Length: 409
Image (tube, rainbow, N blue to C red; front, side, top):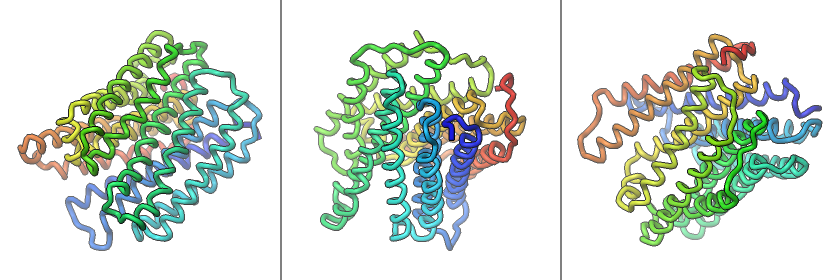
């Protein structure tokens, strides 16, 4: 089966967007609970189901699929990736149901473990198949996105022994969780998106050139900025100093990346098109992420960033909804993999609007809490109402027929 099968692409991303819808539904449900308690639902269970479905369902399926279809040469066997898709779909649905039912329990942990083995299976085949792909920045970032995803799973494997030996309140327990999250967000997802952006420009005949020290600087910054993830459980000065060095290096690395994209990049995307706005919003989200992380080089701001929940939620959504989801959707649209009907185009517009408005509300409310100024009028009601646009937008995309009209995208 050819790696470029349209049916394989459509099936992969329909399943991915299906997980995106489930995650969005749970996100809206969590915000509704602030307005009306639902006796038979546990908020923490919903939160766990939401995060696992978003990252390991939507995020993994979309990025793994995009890397396979973009990075591998033609006529590679699709069988391993089809197997991974099938089993990960079972694992994703299993996590969605069991986390809602029991939170962290035997069944949910079993499905989470199944996902990890799928990730290993995918990685083995992808890293082997990409060997014959010509060398480029896209290939380097794609390989390292997978390496860092594999590295992140060490955090998961350490959770059980740490909790049994030291307890769930020990700093190492939280450090294990944050290790997984940090290298997922800043490694797997971020490097994967950069790989796809590099590849898109290369496909248009413009390889993006970078100074040879860009990648080592970025790698060092990813390692050092893990320090911020554990300062809330282990507030040692040395961790703040390490993070400060890391964010400065990250700012330098992304400045070189941005310069390379602006100087050599070619995306051939019409200004004003929906792809243009999706990609612009996604890239701006990545840049805002970098600037926000740069600000936490100041110890006081670093402490504020992880003590006010609105900032934490807003930052995670800035990465996953903005930097990851909008960017990958834009690139898939440009490749005519996602639907471009009028209904779908409205879905993409609602998605951008919902993301931007919820981010503004979350961060403005966070600033008000920091300044001890209370809450915005009808804060929870407005946030819930706007959040409803997210599942609505995804439903419009998912239920649209696959009609390709490149002039509208």
